[in-house]
Length: 291
Ligand SMILES: Cc1cc2nc3c(=O)[nH]c(=O)nc-3n(C[C@H](O)[C@H](O)[C@H](O)COP(=O)(O)OP(=O)(O)OC[C@H]3O[C@@H](n4cnc5c(N)ncnc54)[C@H](O)[C@@H]3O)c2cc1C
Ligand code: FES
View 1 (tube, rainbow, N blue to C red):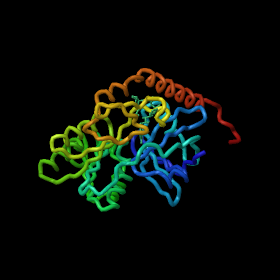
View 2 (view 1 turned 120 degrees about the vertical axis):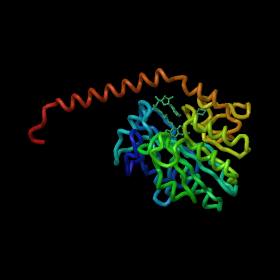
View 3 (view 1 turned 180 degrees about the horizontal axis):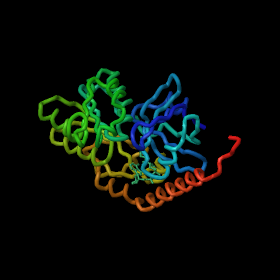
View 4 (view 1 turned 45 degrees about the vertical axis):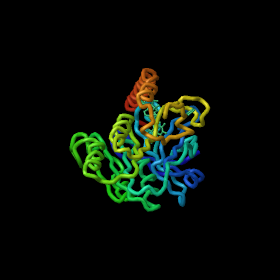
């Protein structure tokens, strides 16, 4: 069992969990992920590592509520325990002396950028990080990324904070201004990673993306996370999650990720309905006079 030693809300439907996982926090490297299971009957869900503290054996994950399992995890509290935290899984990110690295994160893709930016900076790269969100209220990990990078640039879709536009608005301006970039790594929603790759294709900047297809076992056995990279079939859980962005077939990946949407929505709606009934019943129950 893996204890939640701290849980806090970062923004609407997004929570940060610090989990005691001694072996994992010592072994894991930037870019890897874990598979969490809330309880014995729970679904296994992959989550990126947003922070590692080998000294205290604590691992940070950030979970956005998008369906039944992420919702039930986000109802857990400090002191509760996850049944399983399996990992570290996947191949660590490519950390080498590139020169000037631009790390780009969007949404819940921002936290896993932190250990990557830290590792790139530690070995002597210049690290510029760009993070973006729809609006200021949804921006997470600003301070963490400021500390992990030499420079932090921010965009919001509605212009409520930082540059008005997307992370690619900032990246394109850096390129147009003649800024030298040796490597880009992007983690976030598929449309964001696809747009980053489109921006760096012509100037031929090496670009890694961290893919998040549907995963089941996370060990290369089930085939659920199949993606096409450079015309070849790869499994994101064991061959990735990082791949050369210019080689990824994003359109196929987008289609595969929509395969179960109807069932996922039904399960989420049922979860919310059950929760609503439970809360309503609890509110109606006569109060214990001795309580
Ligand atoms: C390597 C990897 C790292 C990830 N890291 C994080 C993370 O750090 N934080 C986080 O909140 N989520 C992360 N995800 C996504 C997370 O695993 C899914 O959101 C979660 O499994 C959804 O489970 P659910 O039952 O709540 O929703 P479901 O009912 O399974 O899905 C609900 C909705 O979410 C979409 N969805 C399902 N799976 C994914 C997925 N893999 N990626 C994006 N959308 C998905 C579905 O299309 C659907 O619209 C990661 C996924 C992978 C593969
Ligand atoms: S999740 Fe089963 S092969 Fe990758």
